[in-house]
Length: 219
Image (cartoon, rainbow, N blue to C red):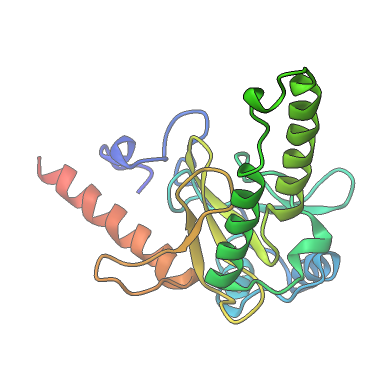
């Protein structure tokens, strides 16, 4: 695929952030186990199999599958540059799916509803009240995002991400953040509406890319 003259037409394959159709080496069983131990979670079966038998990341949907690697500090992390660093204490907690997403959004909406209004401070004090509100808003967002039990595995650009559920009843499923803030997650679905797991999500990208390259070869 990399050598095809149509490769530059595949979204996310070129440029500084592009994956270039390159795959990192697979991980060993010992490495995967070490990463799981660090994060306090057993990776979903399809993703774990991919890490062991295909690659630690690279060529994949959008700008590529986030590469799981050990950094200079000997800590494991994913290189999804558009996402905040993984919070190890949060990744092993259960992901509650749509109800958890709705509850987090509701909490932020409730805080938005009490944003200070200048007209409520005729005697002054608005700036101090708004500064406190912003500080509380930042703290609340940091408490809620990323949601427990999910990790960003691909970015579309402009902060939009695909997430893999690591825990809970939705374990192994792919979710898309349509707002670019890591909160408004929705199940990623196929063209015919089927929810996608890791394998079907990755294969959908691979099959679509191969079809696009074949079409470009006929032009």
